[in-house]
Picture: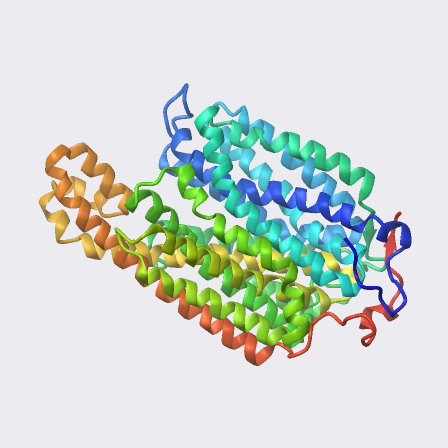
Length: 535
């Protein structure tokens, strides 16, 4: 791959710059294995819940905690891991994260009880939290400014690819091997990636990190973990007024508020809160949060539609996501060309409008709609994401000094994680409530003891129907109709949220590209102390 020659003096040592694309390949490999895991596990849930020796006999609560343990540790430590990378070296944190992730994956594959699986999943979250911010931070330090949009586009495309191929990979493994294979598959990939990183990836860090801020770090961990936990509980209970959800959310928000106030007062803060006074930076992280709020909520009901309503297998349902991945891989690396022509504002707002249009496309879906309609919707959504994620990521990273790349990457990933968790919880609660309301009258014919369980979700209704035999079939079509109505409601809300993001992007992002092109004005950080990097 070749890039246009810069007219400004190079900032990356030539020995590192020559192998930049090989370095990017190893970082994408790391990214793939971490993101892949989050989508591959869903396919194995049913098998894991099966009694031994086929599965672990995990309860619904066990399965939820197998997911939530990873999410809580991952989200809670993203910011901290970015800080540690800036201070001690991003290559070091990346390698530590990959080793921990690989070892935890091996342990998960060998788990003999749900409790062991939950504990090892938390350990995987620890490893993943150290990998994600490091990959983007290293990209910012091995590519010149004019090359970063293209590299970030490839990075963003890899995320979309991993999300799409996760269910397919999981389905193939479950069909041919035991449930632990969905974790064991990570190990050889991690081994290859770690060897390549040790050889190719240079180390880099902030040459002037300042004093440690243990109080700020602790407040950020407590705040993020409590907030995400409360959001998860609110989604589980389909109610955000339940004390189990309200109390953790209030604790989390309180801890984060104290964190911001504390960081404003100390001389060497873990997070420079004045970054958020930069309109481009603040808008970009807000847009990322809104996009993932809407996207994760829709992905939540997409599985139930394809498998529950349309009757596709887990493997086939995963394959239906391929158009979304293909669109991201096609357009994300080329989004920089659109930005060069139209600017960040128009590109991001246009991408958000495409995503909103795809959400509205879900209103066309029913119980017998040709499946190609869903494929077109997925492709449009992927194209929209490809023109939002790379430009806003470049805007975030380009707004900060290069020596703070780890912190910038961590903020980017933290807002994405919080937005996604909120989307699953809030839109999932809306889906559950609308579905339950639609089924209330139809469930009156069931015994009182079965009504509440049957009304929880489409899957729960179909499970009850299966126990009733032929007389339960009368509930199938009403269940499908209620779910379709709930899906349409959630899709409409997602479209509204995305339109808000489009307006935010249009009015608050710059019309010019966020990262200066070669020959443009020198970035502010170029006047600072040179970035340390080992060839």
